[in-house]
Image (tube, rainbow, N blue to C red):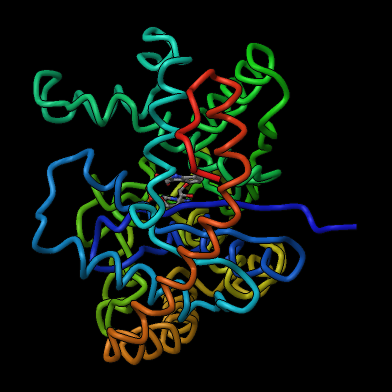
Length: 337
Ligand code: AMP
Ligand code: TRP
């Protein structure tokens, strides 16, 4: 029997991924390549939906790919590519956009959040159709599962709805995808504001740990992380959100249950716990950081690897795209095979 397929994407919108991206998404991507037929994409078209600097984007796309490889993606066991290298994503986005209700797109909470941030007038149509492009990414590959953080759940519901709607109207074509969300790491919080998710667009630099941060920066940020009243290292999301977030991070990185970590630090106070947590994060990211720098030093090799991934992705997408065009009634160009 063939393996189930996974697809996921990550935006090249910063010079480094952060701990939330790493625990919520990237680590699952690495694990799933052993059990699934995996497609992973640096979604640079999505990165055009908010103000950005075109001079920085190529480097950010490369450093995104480099970090994914450094974290453990193996181009022999998965397909890693850049979204804009496969034109079918934009083409299918248009077709699915014609099946998406205006009100339906308008209900997306990420759109509401992002468009209200800079004032509604500043938001682009691209930001509005962002989730439709995401649906195209996923449906193009007939993905069964999509590993993401909790913030993407609503977008995946739209992807499922669009797959079902297309199938119903035009005939069975797309697999409705399932979310793959691990509860314990689905939402990592800002170190300075444990009520908000860690986010590259809204967290302060002190609230975010970047994968490529120096060991000193990681130690400083964890030492200054907001903790709660009292001294006990104990998980309690209501009364102790700061400590609870740190405990979940510790548990995810060490592989121990939260309860075991609580027991170990019983009576030890926040200081000792934070110190050990900092060393755990430093140790986890040291190798990723070094490997990322190595990969970035040979840009030509990295670009070849991504071109190879894009060629594989195009081959995988071709039959689905041909079927979708035909079923929607688009006339086939003569001589196009
Ligand atoms: P983005 O950087 O928005 O492209 O997100 C990349 C991936 O990281 C997505 O799967 C997100 O759901 C996930 N993610 C982003 N922020 C967090 C967070 N604070 N906690 C857990 N997962 C996150
Ligand atoms: N919207 C996703 C995020 O912000 C990124 C993304 C784009 C994605 N296309 C995707 C995730 C397809 C999963 C599948 O994290």
